[in-house]
Length: 474
Ligand SMILES: Cc1cc2nc3c(=O)[nH]c(=O)nc-3n(C[C@H](O)[C@H](O)[C@H](O)COP(=O)(O)OP(=O)(O)OC[C@H]3O[C@@H](n4cnc5c(N)ncnc54)[C@H](O)[C@@H]3O)c2cc1C
Image 1 (cartoon, rainbow, N blue to C red):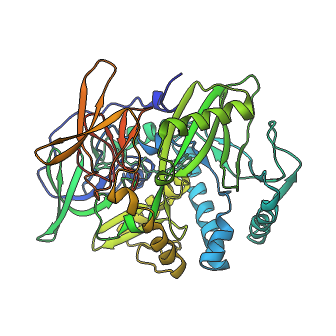
Image 2: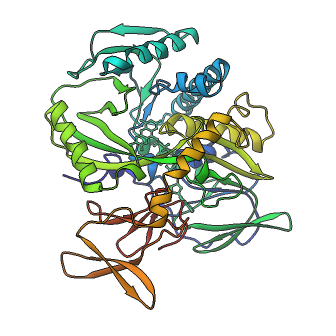
Image 3: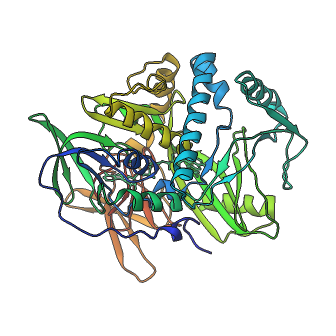
């Protein structure tokens, strides 16, 4: 069994190493996932100099660990938005998702991108008696937006459901094949730099100065497309969302299906298919609520066996930002500084939406969805959720919230370190706090990483950064 995503094997592009540009670039895009690369594609005919950097290999991060359903059926999002804002906002969000789906479809069709883009009816279901009303409410809202919802007695694959309906005009694809092709399309017009980590940003003499692991880059305009902005101000992103983790298992099955499904219950079940594989997501949780990664993986694998009688051939985890008012955060946070984040685990649509809105802001073209997702919106329920949410970080901030017998703490010159001794007897020692906002790190025994339970930064055994928002090694 492989502890990596089913898509990673398709990451095949190659980018030549070169020195960072010394001249001022017009637009610097930080992050080459679905957001950064789709934006690069939209800017490919731009007459000015556009550069994209990534701290690792382009297209090898959250997007390549997604389940990559392109769907407007997003659990109970529409009733959540109606409750947090109002009916009009909920409807507008639905329209934004349809807009993004159409745009993505156009890019794929126009460029003949073979990324296994398939029409795939989406099922929404509950397996809890007391959530039937909520499912009906979601269906009623969708119907009022003009979506045709079809009742069904069951899912096309054997799975326990109490109530279910499905909709058309949803899709699935291979996200890494899509990103690979975008790299090939843009690379003659846009300079791409891999293994360049943005660490700091300052504004001087009408330009942004971005300090990176490879030196400084000067840019007139900067787009932060790295899933989780590496700065706190402007935007205050760490205080407006929490990090959710989910576990994905995939195995080959005998029969071919073409649909995807997700439920609205607290215990997540999400299903899609890719060629001969069934891909199943479960055990979704706020990182801070379930800290024993070994148990978490085990629970998801047990579910895979329980519901499908399957043992995984691929098993991986992924994490995404869940915003406290359920809308993504996209737009200009400061003059000529743009962010696109907070996709609530629906980045195939929201990443494309973010790319298009930022493209239109750069081009000074009107976009009907700019106001919906603007970063400086204020909402009382969102603020209340943020306050409640921040309380959960107190414990991991004050003390290491979880220990197991695999690590011990060592003190040296008054500084405490976490120590792990690997199977060869080699000692790996790191400081105990995450460099981002100083939460105490936890040990992930399954993948041998140090993870931040608050904001999701991850580091290897020797403290080297794997995934932000931290921009530094431990
Ligand atoms: C289990 C799971 C399943 C999901 N399934 C779906 C789904 O079915 N459908 C859907 O729509 N969404 C899904 N999502 C959500 C979706 O995967 C994400 O929202 C989306 O991939 C985020 O895209 P991105 O471009 O923002 O980030 P990324 O793909 O992570 O791209 C950001 C890039 O920025 C780079 N980077 C980071 N920090 C820096 C730095 N400091 N300097 C330079 N570069 C940096 C990274 O290396 C990375 O390549 C799922 C999420 C999870 C957790």
